[in-house]
Image (tube, rainbow, N blue to C red; front, side, top):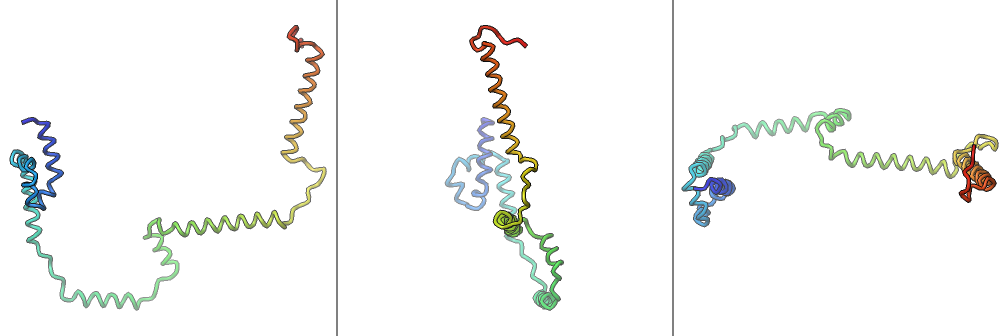
Length: 179
């Protein structure tokens, strides 16, 4: 017998073991599986062990509950109903300790929305009618004004360089300027 075919057949048979176990007619409907079970001792042993396990489970009888089970259960329920409720902090601590992260998602979304509303509201109040300090006329210029001054100085420097190049005649490519 080919060993590669046996491995493939064993894998296929292993995949079909639940069907073979639960449906008696499944092996008859699939003769290739029945043939493999007759030829392969490993697969047939595993199927027989599974059948024996199921037979033991069918024989198992669950133990009967204690005759006082219901009485004790009702007594514990009454005690729990009559007990004082936990304090606020104890409930919060147990909620945090025993809950999953999913329960915190709505709370976190609400807190973030509150932060955005408060932050945006304070910005709107400052822009619309807030008390702005008067900016002195002779104070230090803003960054934008400084940048514009630098660009203007650069433009003036380029114009002066252009005039120097025109006077020296190096635009024609004849002689390079000397320093």
